[in-house]
Amino acid sequence: MDKGVLRRYLDLPQPDDKIMATYVWIDGTEENLRGKTRTIDQEPKSYKDLPWWNFDGSSTGQAEGSNSDIYLKPVAIYNDPFMLGKNKLVMCETYKYNKEPTASNKRFKCEETMKAATDQHPWFGLEQEYTLLDRDGWPFGWPKGGFPHPQGPYYCGVGASQALGRDIEEAHYKACLYAGVNISGTNAEVMPAQWEYQVGPCEGIDAADQLWLSRYLLLRIAEEFGIQVSFNPKPIPGDWNGAGCHCNFSTQTMREPNGIEAIDEAITQLKARHKTHIGVYGRNNELRLTGRHETANINQFNAGIANRGASVRIPRQVGEEKCGYLEDRRPASNCDPYAVTDIIVRTVCLGEKDSDTLNYSTRKAVTDKE
Image (cartoon, rainbow, N blue to C red; front, side, top):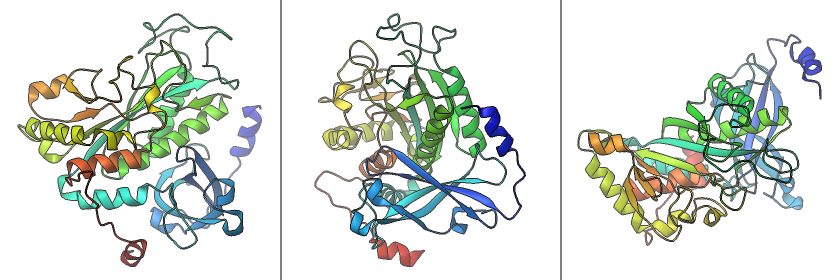
């Protein structure tokens, strides 16, 4: 479709008292995003200025047809790089008819966890890898029915045969900056047509909010180019790298002098709950965590300085300076960052063990507090 024709209409003046707000949410797959737009009468200064809304949950795998309305609760607001002006993108939580969180709403519990650990100031940097595909499902720029040259020249590569899809990556970078996402970098990855960007550092719940919104931006931008985005952790079988969502994590104590002691203790805690963490680190992650292609084996836990074949890597600079952060390399590219950041904080900051059951507030208590 001719984007020049579309531009004629996007450039039409918009009334000052009419703002487009696109509500974005996670559907019943717990991996895919949905969105729909409404008109509001004034520019919201905060997500709190926006009303709850609803959608047909029977069409998103989140409700039965006989009781299909699901509520959308705004939780974060961003500038809209597609509609521009005062228009907004709104990240939302989903709630059932009785105002209880849906099964796909992992944010509710994550926010409770982050509030409980506020005094430790948990920071996250999330490294989102993804693969660009043609509409036929084959990686973008790969020979049809065939394969490109083996891995080697593509990581941070330059050139028409190395950097496949740079237009999408750069458009996404600028869109994130415009929207207000704290994107901190990007690079071409090891497999051709695979890219990575980083969100953070962000404290608490903001990291996952911003990563989900950045995924929405990426999907929308690729849509305009007629390209698909895959978050499959192993999009192509064989001798090709998979795709992860490495989670860099630190507390205030880790960032202070001699914080390496707190980092070592955190690694011990993570090791003790390895299987539990793997259980929430993404679907089909076993296809990626094989012990090859810069991964650890899914059934084993190991850690090391500058070791990209480890479950948890301590960056070399952190090892030298004796403070900083750790990198959990286990989460898959399709993970829910709410679930990942939640369990890391519960394990490291709140000292939760597999036998523990945290007493989270009920939805009513949160509603009363609001």
